[in-house]
Amino acid sequence: MSLTDKITGRVKQAAGDLTGNKELHREGRREERKGEAKQEHERAEAEADLKAAEVASLERKTRKAR
Image (cartoon, rainbow, N blue to C red; front, side):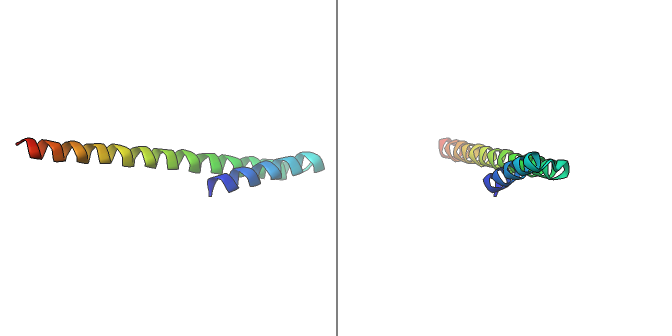
């Protein structure tokens, strides 16, 4: 889940900052970016689904008009 990845990533970054563990901070940043990428992918899929529905609707209207 993208939100979980983002939150977990931020927590790891903060923990890395508090403990001085640079690797934990980097791991958290990577995880946060993974969550952001998943969100972007979900948005793109939703947009593609919407466009596909619009095309299907136009095709049905075109067939009826013939």
